[in-house]
Image (spheres, rainbow, N blue to C red):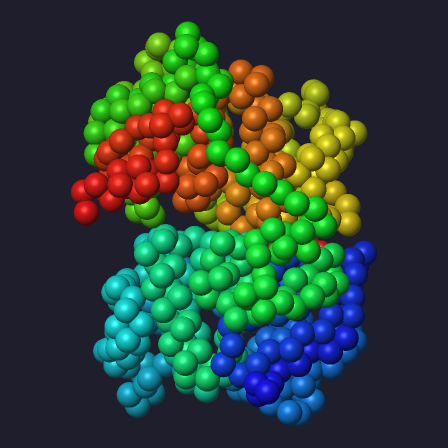
Length: 497
Ligand SMILES: Nc1ncnc2c1ncn2[C@@H]1O[C@H](COP(=O)(O)OP(=O)(O)OP(=O)(O)O)[C@@H](O)[C@H]1O
Ligand SMILES: [Mg+2]
């Protein structure tokens, strides 16, 4: 019999209007990687926040290393050896990597923080984890992926950790970085540590997990050994129905569809001479590894970053886009990959966020049309199955994935000609993904055009009419969907390497 490290028994948790956990029990063995899956809002993060002392349970018990425990703060959890890496990154953006890792326990010399020592310790830690990041740089200069790696290094720097909780650690990582992370996880498991691993990427579970527990609507469904947990089985346990994705076989764009957007010789930060055309009614996929320059290209087009040179044409006419405001007034919307920084005002309600980008459409004269706002918000909350007790709920209180859905809703509500979606389904469960795909298809059927950046190749193959591949700031290939395959995309994506 494996040694049991932790049992959570009959856990209950209520929030105003929401029964987030209803009698959930889970048992974790020493030295196992235990995956926790379920739809957005199923209760995964809440269960783990109870375990890591952020929330208090309303019922049930926790038995850790054979003893019943109360975990009343994150510090207490830490002292017991339970550490959580959060879904929303929690680093201090203006501090350096080393400062973030050792915050609150900095090495000192006399009464001063010993920066040299701290940087050196951070470097040793990062090196031992094979993470190539300079400990002296400020965290806000790092990509999301790198910030994620810093969070992981920080969690692993607590030496007594026996249980590490990772809430969607791979959502923003590239394939290479994911493999590095998995190696780290395997090493930890070999040292007898336990890992609870939350992910929406079901395809990665067989690579890393020993067992899988499924939650649905705040309830425990079942725990399976990984050998028995096929993808279809997990999905049907998660959503109570089966979902299949088939790749698109041929482009839906008519031969004579006009070019709505043309970019010529664009040069910007990490963007080297990029040219492409987007046609009316088209879904143009952008593939590439993290850092390939896809986001930078779109930010430059949207006016969020300066262009060094290059031209942008809309409907054959040259346009000047110097700011996001200019882009929006030309009918371009941009759903950014960094939702937290650019997407939502978490202190405002669902309703306020939903119409934020299109507020002028809802104000006649001086007054807001509250009824219209409520109607459209309800419509999209329903269409995307955003799980919320009401449209007046503060966005802060929604689960991570439901916040993502709301950003998508916000841009769908804003009427535009061109939609740039940067990783639109990151962190979103399988059921809701297919709702987003349906809405995207509806948009192109109405004659809108879409650029979709995605790091999930199956998703690009499912949605795109044509796929542009980038590598190191350049376009290295372009494929009509009828000829596109995972292998061809990967070979273009690694062309210059
Ligand atoms: N602080 C809070 N106040 C009110 N409701 C909350 C709060 N935190 C979570 N909830 C609600 O509890 C439910 C479970 O949320 P939780 O964040 O645990 O979901 P999750 O399984 O982690 O989802 P995701 O995959 O989207 O991250 C959701 O309905 C959410 O809206
Ligand atoms: Mg969550």
